[in-house]
Amino acid sequence: MQEITVLERARSEFPPCAVRIVDGGYVVVGTYELDKASGARHGSIEVYDKGLKLVGQTATYGAVLDLKVSPFDKETLVSAHSTGNVMVWRMREGALAAVANLQLFGCDCVVTSVNFSAQEPGLLVVTTAGGAVATVDVETGAPDVRYASAAKVYEKADLKEYDVQGKREVAADLSRGVREFSRGHSVECWIGEFGALSPLENVVFSGGDDCAVHAYDVRAGGLIWANSAVHGGGVVALRPSTPSFRPHMPTALLTGSYDDRIRSLDLRMMGNALYPGDNVRPLAVSELDLGGGVWRFVESPSNALDAETNDLLVCCMYDGARVVAVDGNDFTVKNVLKEGHESMCYGADWCDQFAVTCSFYDKSLQLWKP
Image: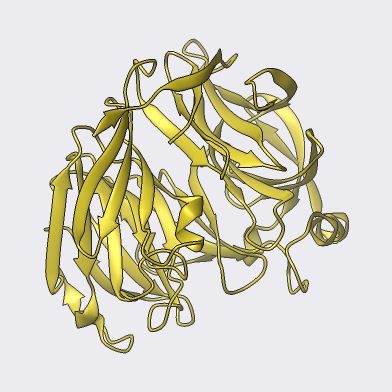
C-alpha cells in the first residue's frame, strides 16, 4: 500500500461534494454552501482545467449534492440539488451550459443522489433526504440522452415559477413523471443504483441511514428485497456488477457504509425477481475495514480494457481516498491519499490521465496519478 503523490492542488470557492472528469480532462465540481443564519442552501458548478485552474463557474440556487455523466453522451451531465430539482448540463470545450432545470419534488426536498440507467436512455433514479427512491424519464421517450433532446423536452414542458428560499425561480414541472417506489427508507436515503447485468438488469438498489439496502423491481415498482442486519451504519455507496466490473459475478453487489467497511454481497438468493423477504441474509458476505466511512465508489478506466482488473477509487470520508483492487470477494488496498484532505472526502473521479478527489469543509481539490 502506497501513499499517493499529488500533482495539483486547488481550493474551491464553496465546499465541494461531487466531482466529475469530462470533455477530455476538464474537472467539473458541484458545491454545497449552507447559510447558517437563514438555513438556505446554495451551490455552484465549477469547471477546472487539468492544472486545476478555474475556467468557469455557474451559480445554482440550490446546493449540489451529486453529479453524473450520461453513459450515452459524455457531453451531458445531470446534477442533483437541495431544492427538489435536477439540472441537465452540456459540457463542450471547457464551456458549461445549462440545458434544462427539472422540478421533480417540492422545493424543500433535498435530492441526495442521481444516477443514469445503462439500459434505458433518459431514465434516472433519484433519492431524497426524506427516504424516497424514485425513477423519472427526463427524455420522455427521446431516442438518446443528448443535450439536444433534453433541450427539446424542456422547451415543451410545463414551465412554472417556484418560491425557492424566498426567491422566484423557473423550472419545468416533471413531478407527474416521478415514479416513487412503494416503500422507501425510514430516514435519509443517500444512494440509488440501477442493476446492469442479468438477472438484475431490472432492479434498482438503494441505501440509507437506516442501515438498510433495498432492491426494487423497476417494472412493477415494488420492493423485492431489503436487509438492515448486515451493516453497522448507514449504507451510502453501492456498486452492482457491470460489463466492466466483475461481469463474471452478475448477482454480486458492493456496498459501502458509515461503519468504515466495504462489503461484497452475494444476492443469488433473490432468484428470478422473487420476493425473498425482509432481512433475508445474502448467501455470502465478505468485508474489509477501510478506516473511514465508505461514501462513494468510482470504477477504474482500466477495468474496461483488462478483464482481470476490477479496481475502484473509494471516498473514505474522514480518512481520504483509497484505490481498492477487488478480486472476487477479496479486497486489497493498493494506494492511499490522506494528506491534503483534512475533512470529509465526498467526491472522486478518474480518467486514463489522472484522478481527482475533493473534501468538503477544507474546500480541497487534489489531482493525482493513481
